[in-house]
Image (cartoon, rainbow, N blue to C red; front, side, top):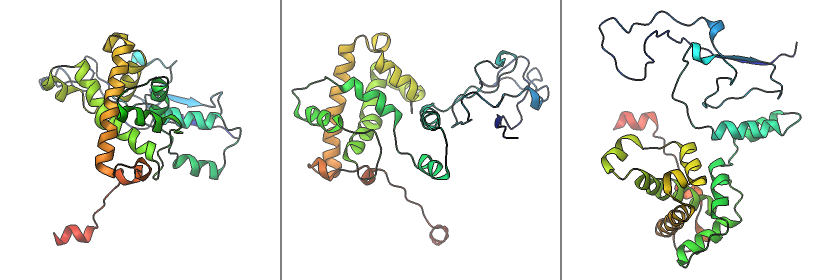
Length: 249
C-alpha cells in the first residue's frame, strides 16, 4: 500500500529497580522481570518527511514515552545520521544511483562545523598560517587524494582532541580512564561555545591555532614538506590478512 516504517527489533529486559549501566550485587534483587513486549518498543510509520533512516544514533522518537521503559543509554554520535537525513531530505525522489552515492558519501559533518571557527583567524606561526590557507577552500570531503582531508583528520584526531581533553581534564590518569575516544558531539559543541569548558573564545582560538600548527608539522613529517603531495589515502589505509596467511603463521 506504499506504507513505510521503522520498528525496533530485539529483546529489551525489564529492570524494575536498576538501569543496567553499573554492576549490581547478584543477590536476587536485580533480576530481569522478563522482556518488553514488541508493541512497547519504539516505532515510526509514514513520517511526514517521507523517509526513515538511522545510523546508530539516539533514534528513539522524541514523542515516545521513553520514561516508562529505558531502551538504551549508549549511542554513537549523530554525524552519520545527520548527513543521511540531510541528503534524503533534499531529494524529492531517491534512486538506486542516489543510494550508491550515499553509501560511499565522503562528507564529514565535524569538519563543516569546525571550519567556521577557523574563518578569520590569523597566525604569525608560518605552519598555522599555511594550515589555515590549506583548509580554507576545502569542501569537507574525505577523498583519498585530498591534502586538506589528510591535514584535517590528522589535526582532529591526533592533535586537537588530545589537547582539548588535556585542557578540560588536567588530571592525566582520569583523562586516560574516561575521555578516550571522546564524544564527537560534545567536543564540537564545546568548541563552538567555549565559555563553559575553555573559558573564552580567545582561549579556544589559541587551542585551535596551536594544534593546527603541530598537525601541519606532523603532516610534513609523515608525507613530506610539500602539501600538494599529501593525501588522506596515504594515512587512511586498511590492511587485511588473508586467512591462509594467518594459518601459516
